Length: 297
Image: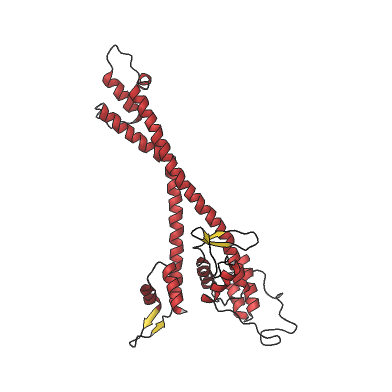
C-alpha cells in the first residue's frame, strides 16, 4: 500500500519515486525506511502548491489572450506592410500609419501636382498591399479564435468535472471515511482523493452514473463492459482512507433505541467550534453529519 501511495504522489506531484521517498522517509543504517514526522504536512504543502500553480497559470493565460486578441493580428500585419512600403520606396523614417502615407506623397509630389493621400490609396500597389494586409489580419484573428475555442473547451470540461466531483464526494461520505480532526488536513486529503480522478474525461449523466473516458474511449472493466461510476469510486477509497466500523446496537457509542442526530449542530460559528464538537464525540455517524453540516455552510 505504501509503495502505491508513493507512486501515486510521484505522478500527481510530477516527482520521481526517489524524491518522494527522500521527502517522506528516513532510512536507518540497516536500510529500513520509516515515515518521517510531519510527512503529511510536507505532502499537503506540495499538493497545495501544485494546485495554486495551475490556477495562477490558467488565470495568467486567459488575461494575456484577452489583452492581445483584438490588436495583435492587425499590429503585426500593419508593421509588415509599413516595412515593405519603406523598402520599396526608399523611405528612411520611423513614422507609421497615415504619416507614412503622407511622407510617400510628399516625396513624389511636384509643385503643380494634385497628388493626395486619397489618390495614393487608388494606386494598384497600395490596393494590392491593402488586400494582403486584410488577409494577414484575418489569418491572425483566426489563429486567436482557435485559442479561444481551446479555452472554451477547457471551461466546458471544468463544468463537467464540477458535477463529477460532487458525485464522487457524495459516494465517499456514504462510506464514512476516517478523516483528520484538523479541518484543513481533512479537506486536503479529500481533495487529493478527488484529484486522482481528474485525468479522466467525463460523459455527464443527470442521474449520477457518469461515464469515465480515456483518449476518446470509455473506461471498461475486465469483461469489456463500461466501468460503473460507483464501482470506480469505491474501488479507490481504500487507497486513501480507513473506514469507520459501525458499533453493535446497544454497545459503546450508541444510545438506547438507536442513534439520532438531532443533537448534531446544523451550523458552527467558526472552525474552532467545529473542531471542538469533533473532539466531543467519537460516534462516526455524528462526526460525518457534523462534517456535512460544516461543508454546507
